[in-house]
Image 1 (cartoon, one colour):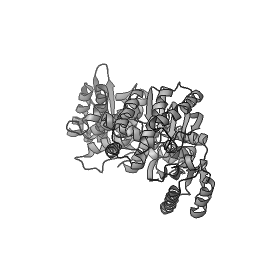
Image 2 (cartoon, rainbow, N blue to C red; image 1 turned 30 degrees about the vertical axis):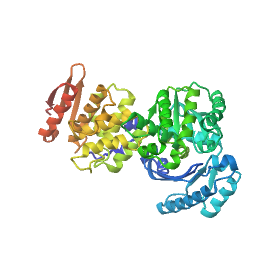
Image 3 (cartoon, rainbow, N blue to C red; image 1 turned 90 degrees about the vertical axis):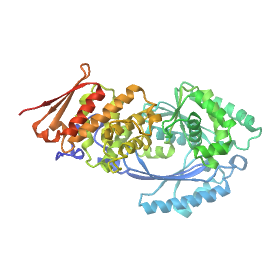
Image 4 (cartoon, rainbow, N blue to C red; image 1 turned 180 degrees about the vertical axis):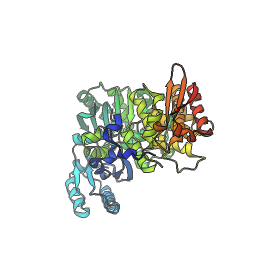
Length: 517
């Protein structure tokens, strides 16, 4: 291997993706951040760890407390919910101390800010646990939720809709910025107990939703859904459609699909749905009301696409602490770089591998090139898996990992490329239904990428471009390998077979040129 591993190269040599964030001091300060979210329905602790622009969930625990239950009738926090929330916060403080992380950042939303005993409860928390609770207004809640969407979805353009237990917030996002925002009393906990059953709830929601549409405008092509109730509905949509990839982040629905799922919820047994989708009883109890809110939201705003974001207010609080230089980075690339640094046998080789196989993929658009770069960074991170299952583990890792900045089809493309990194054929793998989500062209491109990495990895003892050079003429369908003398010993039977397999996947003839010095 070169004596200039990737982590030591100068900033100028990193190209379009820039120097890895984990090397920068300003990003290292974000490597372990704990956030407590005291919501109307649940209290959650999230500890973020890892690559600063695309953090991993080091710890994630939620306790359903129902602080906002009965708030509309009494004006006060639910007494049982207060007891449960206090116990949860005590536990979270102990956990944070045990993890050795800095003081927790804690935020409270609609229930605590609206309840007449909210200020007293906040003082009680600080007195008994030492945790200072930041009670935010609706506009700030909307802003933080929208920032959470931007953390995992930098190109987000449309309307963010965050539903909690006691409120629903809307915010416009475009070009990495949060614009107009507003709050409303359309949380399902607050709508519980309204007279008149479903019709009463419908009639109550309608004028509020009309005002929201007039204020925020209805020219948003895309709505980004944030919040547990929305995710529960999306999971039911997956169940209804028999959708094969159960990853909620960046799951997409049409207006028609949402309408069909709401009808499906109405005619289904809630307990059966709960069992099939793995949804908690307390969450599922709110789904019928939340689905009516969603029905009127879609009818009022007429989006072409409804997208689910697993990132929200907690991720928005982390995003708040990021300098602009960190926010501007591609979350997928940064996560893959961190994974390579942590798990690969030869950290830094991913960049060298990318440079070696790049001639095959020239003239590709940025969205394709970033997937090629990501695949090269991840090509060796699952090497500890049993050899008989390594290809499958690679596929699972890419399709189910907590990665931002990836559509579902891009996840599958990345997974298939990594599968072919370790396996020539995809026959017999248990992923047929997932692979079928790609077009024939996308399947072919993923195979080519995987086999290119499989071949390039044969030169992992050094910088491949110092030993050999690939040249590809796509119109002539001709792949040439120019081999320097010092690489001859590396070019054995297996290496030749992998080169020929790569050429075959391209539908090209292959030649090896032995360079003489």
